[in-house]
Image (cartoon, rainbow, N blue to C red):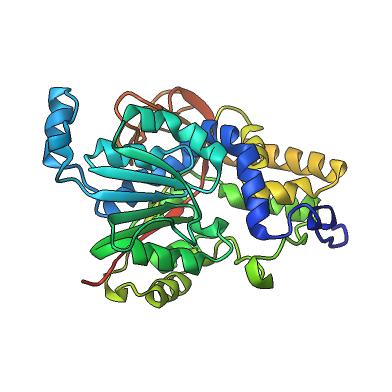
Length: 373
């Protein structure tokens, strides 16, 4: 490997981890909405269920009768805060389920631009809010549910974000957050054995993060240093909250009821149109990994790209994705199609459709917990 380097060219531009993250998400919002959001939204139903945002009776009637849910029908729905909303996929699902109001918060104004269609689709219900998850501009005890979809790993002080979620939740309210699981499945077994067999065998092949990080380690320099988090502390490791011990300790420290913690391992996967799509997704629609890739030399980056494409070709299998229900799959006899798979979307919107030559597993852990009464 090349000698370890510090981010010298970033030291004057991005003084902190927050500045780096903000810049990356501002630049990558459009790419994220059209690529990585198709992956992360697969955890949306588990997050909503974990946070106690279930479809209300009025929303069920509205869906069956194909009518618009009235303000009166929404009155009994929960008040929901969607932290790190990105393009608003979770906020949209919460509104569809009958939430009385949804605050969709992000620190990136460009991400909120991509979420604007959701606010327009649910006027008076979904409100976009630019703000810091570690210092929420919201009153105490004002929400029934708080959701943080893949956001904790991007906060310099994630424990403070959990404390803020605790503050704005009503007593008895629920928090749910999602994080990525590590590629060797040890974290998955530590959390929950229910879905391990499915994750290991469907689909086969290496974890998406494993593919990326292995390629960087083998063909580039994985030792570059990200800017420090606030107060000079380094940012927590990428998979920190995939550890049961770390997640439980952080939630207990924030004041949550440790006995109420539940977790679910979600067999998320990236359905790719070609063998270059995984590299492109990480290089344009992430923050930490994009920063790591940008610090490689041109020669290293070319070798990393080639290695990732080769791993995708060698270790992944085809998938066909369509529909509106999560984790519904069955085997097929279609050539090149390993399974049929439904993924969650709002009615008639954002379908993952068509035959995809490659599918790469990217398992996630969803953790939920209750604020004591």
